[in-house]
Image (cartoon, rainbow, N blue to C red):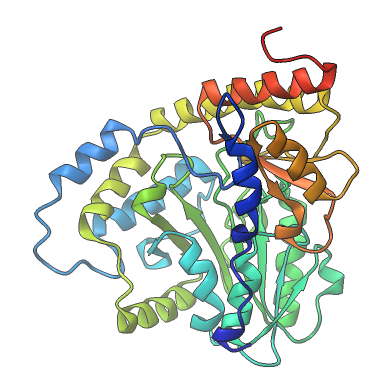
Length: 378
């Protein structure tokens, strides 16, 4: 597909629903995009401020401090221990979306190749395939992946559906990708946000977990972003880790293209990766909001599917998603239609936990009132 033939940006279709929601007398509750509303922790902002004398060009590969921080984070937070993961296996990126969109192109995927992604999927996986001129296939079953597969995207916990892939599922996907000679990449940006058993107590596994990959990282990569765990969406701070040969290839392309993270942001990432306290505090904020919003949606007639982890509730009331989006807009609530996440879930809507406690409470009150035919506060 030529770049000029890319589809229109899907969220532009939400403009009339946003306008409809805006007339609500108590204001809009925006649960659509999932942009953090809580402040960036002081430990991160202080590190950024202290690093603003950035007169030299930054390093594409990241400072030694940042690369060490990423490796140590994988060991401490993701259970990637005893695998030999080192500084040569990691690379910072300018947020994760640009990486997702450009990775097929940077890996040499092209016409006649297939990029596999989940059935309920962040749309940029398919856009990345289109940019590279490849074909996208939505499939969660490794047995369905064709011989022409060159890149496999996993997403655990999933966006939009909060689906978690356990060790066995990750291993089965990796095994099939290796049979095909394909690169497999696990997008793990919501890994710190586990809610339902067993993920309320157990760590969401990474594809680099030794139970999945052992010490063999060949053609295997994991992606992570600090946007949600650390409220750093405006910083565009993310990284990729795994196969050293692929990291070298990506580094070379990014050097030629000038894709490098600004030096002050690299210092901020070091601070964020080294401080677990703010991550735990942010998770509790999202837990509290989820505990308010989820039962209110159920009271209003929605069924919550999956959503065992991640930043969203994946809900349906058994009607076309656009009808549900309209119903929510009439309550002053903005969500995201399942149509944006592939053709397989036309009756689902995605609702984000990224709104203030007050706004989440307001949404819950409106949903409960709609269920009883009363007005909030009656």
